[in-house]
Length: 242
Ligand SMILES: O=C(O)CCC(=O)C(=O)O
Ligand SMILES: [Fe+2]
Image (tube, rainbow, N blue to C red):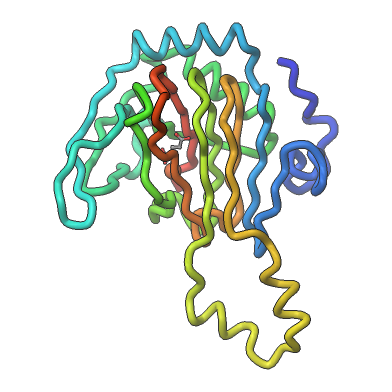
């Protein structure tokens, strides 16, 4: 693996983020304890094509019917779910995916190992796969804030195939959050709210993006539709179910 991060470089707390450096390659501080790390070439170009080909052929993709704002619709992307045995079951938008075992897909375990090595201290036990067949396939604004991931989930996202935009936007702040600024001088308020409220990444073939801290509590993310995109993209999001 070409990644520069090694376990021996490890300071005690979140070494991969410390190592990348607050201002260095790939790390975006979203403010108030939310962070994103982006490593464009996590898996080599050639290996990434091999993984893409394998996943296209061997994953039992389904396109389920889900419920969004009280209406049934076909999810605009293919999906599959892999997890350790015995975990609480995942359900989202009224859909409970069937759970497949890692044993059925050795390359997924291999990618999981590579992610664990690159992110010392991480411990993912489940994986949601998405396949976007073309530019009409997408995922709308959401956060992965299901209770089974706990209050500060780390989500590691690997992308293969067609580059697509990954957008982040801040959730509208709650009154309780606004209240925190009461009684503080305006200069301080400005400082605390000076982070940008949106970010975008073009997720490259073989890239790794990590969301951590309060990113799921305070931010929404999406992969919007794109005209002119005709080729497929597969995305893997590794998560830790508590
Ligand atoms: O495809 C992506 O990059 C994001 C997928 C996602 O947000 C999800 O599965 O929750
Ligand atoms: Fe998500």
